[in-house]
Amino acid sequence: MTKKNQKLVFSGVQPTGNLHLGNYLGAMKNFVDLQKTMSCIYCVVDLHAITTFKDPTELRGNILDTTAGFLACGLDFNKSIIFNQSSVSGHSELAWILNCVSRVGWMNRMTQFKEKAGKNKENASVGLYVYPNLMAADILLYKATHVPVGDDQKQHLELARDIAQKFNNDFKSVNFFPLPEPLIQKKLSRVMSLRDGTKKMSKSDDSDYSRIDLKDTEDEIRKKIKKAKTDSSPIPEKVSDLSNRPEALNLLNIYSFLTNSNLESTLNLMQGKDFSKFKDALSDVIISSICPIGEEINKLKKDKSYLIKILKDGALKASEIASKNLKEVKEIVGFV
Image 1 (cartoon, rainbow, N blue to C red):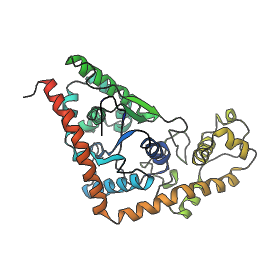
Image 2 (cartoon, one colour):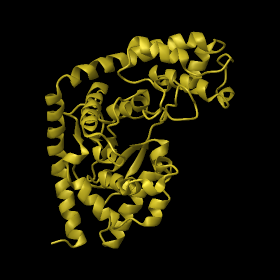
Image 3 (spheres, rainbow, N blue to C red):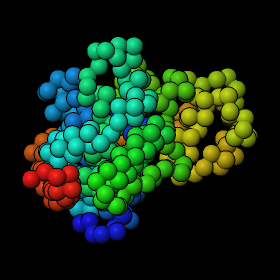
Image 4 (cartoon, rainbow, N blue to C red):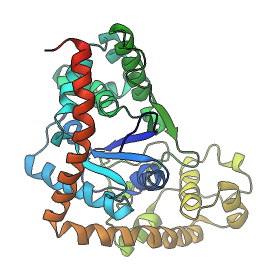
């Protein structure tokens, strides 16, 4: 599947349970578009998931849920490699080698560790501290050339590039690892919480009303959008008038993206309207886009053996690429 100088995309999604609208607009929709023009590897990154404790039964279910979400959103296992990370041991093997290339100072600058560990850093797992090195291994194991990233992931891709460059320099293996390039979504890379327009939509938010899950029913979607935070002002004419209205901007951005429009066109269409009326139109657009995906997820989840087969078949294809590249890495490092 991967020829020399061929562009190859790699991306991973943590199995956290229900995928939500932010996952769909910020990642999955883009993944589907990329597989039309590039070779793609999409991974359920279950090794990343255990950096904080997960109930084993819940984790197994979440892995299959995420796989079902991949397929329901439109990822095609005949066009892309779809598998779960732990089924290819090369991820862990290369991560250890890269642990020995990466520097402690680099880890200390990773902002996401500080955010996830919070004030209790002493009790955070070592895995959480060094997981950016595993993320680099995920990408470099396949010599991926491009990685779809959001604003909050740019730092990790920069780290992967630094590690690749240092490995190439340390072992005098010029250009062995390509320096992966970011694929930044032009329209909308971050969907914000429905309760706070300054925070990213997240599964970890305590309030179900902060997000639209892909498995939400029509009634649930309408209720959540109706309760979504806005302000008392009508929809403005100019984009600049939204600079201090994050919740309003978020809802208008979602509408624009789902209607394949831009923010300016949406404002031309909706200017002067109250948000109560706009929310009805937004609900209709979300329902028409999301509910068919939710129905397909529920259908796929009923056949666990099918989902497991997709992952196993994908792991075989991924392992073929990974084992070849890892063999070369071991030879370069000096292993016998």
